[in-house]
Length: 369
Image 1: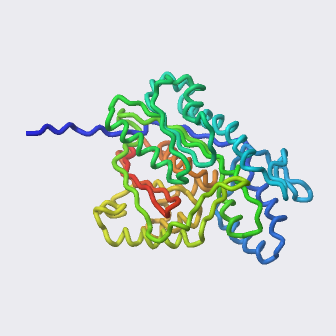
Image 2: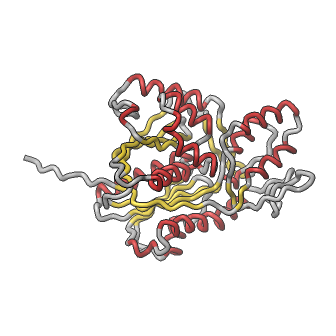
Image 3: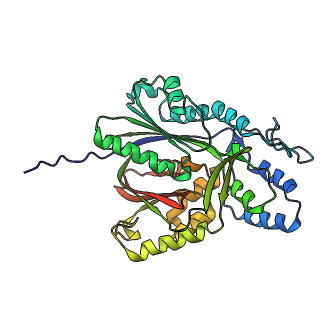
């Protein structure tokens, strides 16, 4: 008779978070006022901006709106008629991304090397550099250079789930592993000069942020149960992220929230064990860790799954206070849940999900211990 070895469960033991020093949300509005000269377009933008659910977004770029609206930053990085090139943006990424990641790591542990890190997983989609962030962070933190490294690149907002899934598999296969998972995004490096309202509204969502998480077999924090991806047929062009001469250009179709709501309603009503609910009812979950991609995305999830308004409050709070930080956002939501945990409350079951190019979703079940 074959002996079955019990499966090790990976746990997020702690999460550190960081954002840059400058709130640029107001400065962005100042630039838009001068980029949209058509009265009707401005009226549409202003109406949608008020409904965004965002109050603050952060960047290393220092806001400084000129009287004539020609620029929104002190270094004239974004000056009308001469927005920065991709090369200039990547130079800033190489300078700033490690600094922001290190701030998040310090929030986790200011001497992370003492944690005996065996694996480093870094997720980022807003820049490229080689040697990569994985090597840079290992060198600057003093982590043993023999630590195994993996870089999850250019996957967009759901990369956080993919990074966690890697850590989950590492710990399951090597129970003594201690995995540092880093998400760092500098979305504000990729503003585009345009008079298209839909593109400006998409840019209105994005902000910069970084997280660092320690994932081990130690049973404390958040237990990771299982992971499951899903894709919506016929939606490949709804979210795209392409490299141009002036940064990375995002396309976010207005149909995205509609398609997400429809797909989730189908998942809820079919109650299939192979679906993202794993054959469970929404009432079986106490917590919903949903990527705060935007107010309309969160509304679509709430509507499609018929969740009570308070279910997505952690996600809405992160959106309001920080904006959409791409892959880092979901980790901010999980960090908020960990910080709000009350002693004696008992184990709480949760479902996490994030959406991105494809149009695809990455989901996972978890327990807050």
